[in-house]
Image (cartoon, rainbow, N blue to C red; front, side, top):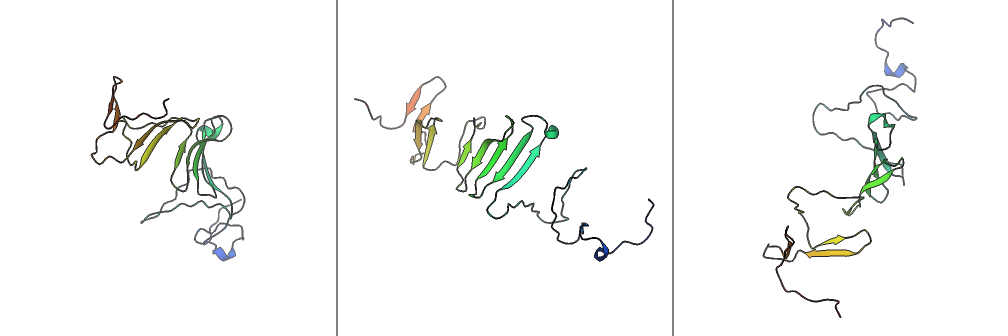
Length: 171
């Protein structure tokens, strides 16, 4: 025990397992910090990278409330196909909540909430409303040069159709 009253010890004289903060280093084994971790650059943009090993996925786990209850955790994953996924531990196991393929197609595990005006923007080509069974309930096409709705279902249940009505599949 005692107090060090000397000058700083040069990095070259420290043990090989001592963290040298001014150089690149590889750490092995789990590291636990008892205080918040803050990564900050004095200027410019910053990057925080998590890389899986060759042929392996990358993960980031976050827990609230000490992570001691179901529902406290979230897991973010990028798999080797480029799929980006968010999982929750509401059942005690990791359950998929959102998946986005490398092509940008998104799959949601449950309901999708859209803004208060109900507008979906950015749809080009076709929008399908499909049940989980795979049954298509409605298909909307983006081939309307007029910019007005082709089909409109109003709050009172009235349906307005801006085009021909054709019969298909009836005997």
